[in-house]
Length: 114
Image (cartoon, rainbow, N blue to C red; front, side, top):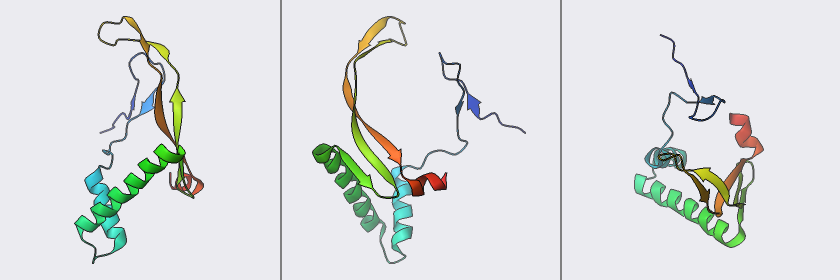
């Protein structure tokens, strides 16, 4: 049986890739951290370590607007300007407000994995 892994988003002529595997969730990520820390590490300790790293990234983005993890990548705050869009239900045009978002650029070691 052959599976088609490409889909075309509505309103787009460009196909995008849909993985047959679901993305890793936080619980699975905590288990991976626990494995990396060793058998003596509890799940609760691994979860606290994961939460501490995520909190540090958030604080760094708020304070410095950029967090660089050498080899892994760079998280940076970016401004998105206001733009015109449409309501997907009514198809009526609307203005989407300007906002800040977080961008991620993969580092060399992370790019080598993919």
